Amino acid sequence: MIRRIIQIDEEKCNGCGVCAQACHEGAIGMVAGKAKLLRDDYCDGLGDCLPTCPTGAITFVEREAAAYDEQAVLEHQKKQSQQSGCPGSRAQQIRREAQQSSMRSETVLSELSQWPVQIKLAPVKAPYFSGAKLLVAADCTAFARGDFHERFIKNHITLIGCPKLDMVDYAQKLTEIIRQNDIQSVTVVRMEVPCCGGIEHAVKTALQNSGKFIPWQVVTIATDGRILD
Image 1 (spheres, one colour):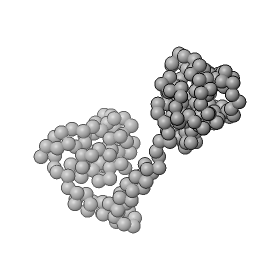
Image 2: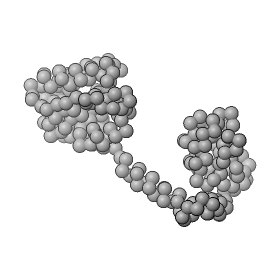
Image 3: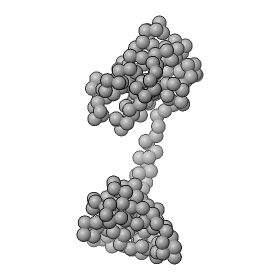
Image 4: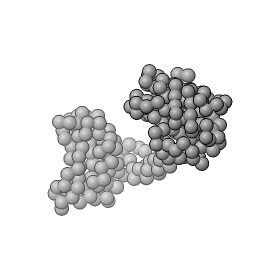
């Protein structure tokens, strides 16, 4: 039958073996230091292995291939489980891992409570600014720390920007947001790089121009993700 199935480019394969570990069905194995599709009927064509390959050696193709045989896969998994001495079948282990992954996915949700988040696009006056703890963050900061949502965005109204890319001074917009709304506090999160000084300066200017006394702080993140102060 003609169906979708994976194809592995041996020249691109670096032999890391990550795809073999990701293949729950055991369709992929390591042969002479290279990943190989061992059996067509073990490959379900869903491609769990594709995103794990660091070199892009795995792709989908449509070709003549044996139909996916779930029963054969289950028997193969059972044999692997018995050989490894692990309790329970491989299928059960996979289901447990899937459930755990699902639970993790449910907890890793966005903490954003409003939209839009770009300083340039945000309105000056909005209900969500009332009583808000304002977070003003440089664009890159969210990529520098994996816990950015939990540590900084949670329970805050978030505004982001990059003064180097936007080539604008955010001070006027931020001044009006602070002046026209009941902002309770302001946290600035910036990178250690010099260009991020523009966003810190804009917030400082806005606070001064607003005529309000509002608690504020600056958190600086290193390029390796460490919090510097």
